[in-house]
Length: 341
Image (cartoon, rainbow, N blue to C red; front, side):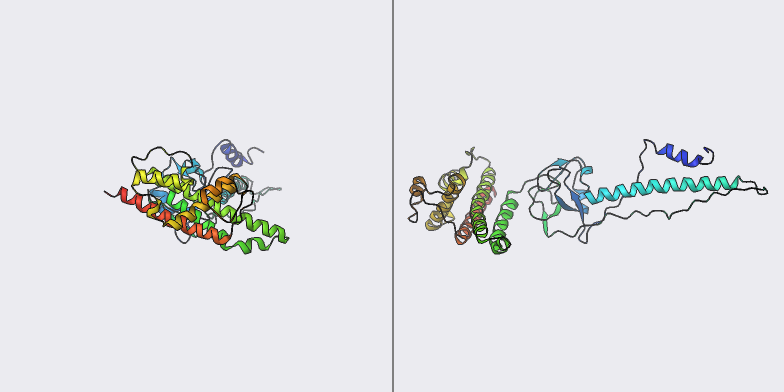
């Protein structure tokens, strides 16, 4: 029996503990980007990197997830579809090896049979066609295309990206703009978001929560952006935590370093309005929106008495967004002029 399947047994023995190498080609989409996936189980964010930049800019030692910032070497970023395609190709390759060995054993067995005998035996192996390995399917092009300001790597995502996959740089400018776009999209789609809710109470409460959350996210986005811009100054002092959530303190600190305060970018009316919105964000975050004496003292808001609950309108959030965008643009100009020799 061993002689009959000698080649097959040798092939199986040769496979024991050895690696079967199967070349897998990774196709790019129509714009030249290749699919990648974060290997962190808690993330698995899918994105694309331009094929040329993956070869020329991305380093073998380190790649970063654009969403969560996970860092692994370049061999860890295969997508689930690419891994499954590779596994199927490897199994097909093993099948081809075993099938070939069996066919050779059959041919050898048949050659050894006597030509003139009363009884003869013939072995036949039904041969399958050899497997052709196809590239893993390419996902559709992603709309948000980004070029890293630091290393010029081109990558694409759906949603948001915080880190460059090639150098790990976290762009404060990009994150701020993405945050504002997300807030605008939320406000623009409030009707569609609540339309499928089962009753009017749920729809009303959901709309209210989304509007209030949008106001809080505007303040947080500005705070983080101002912190990043402030840190770019070579001689910036250490700022206390969350100082840029307070427009009065933030303006004083900004003027200390850059020579101008927030009043250089917003008029008195706009700055007072923005201060009121920032204080409302504080009430929402820390007092469940209940008005207190501290809020009234800092804003002079004549609409409320202590103990009442804030009513935040969509129009007010959009006004806050406009004022923050205008102020942030002024801070960017300050930082840029300071950096210019």
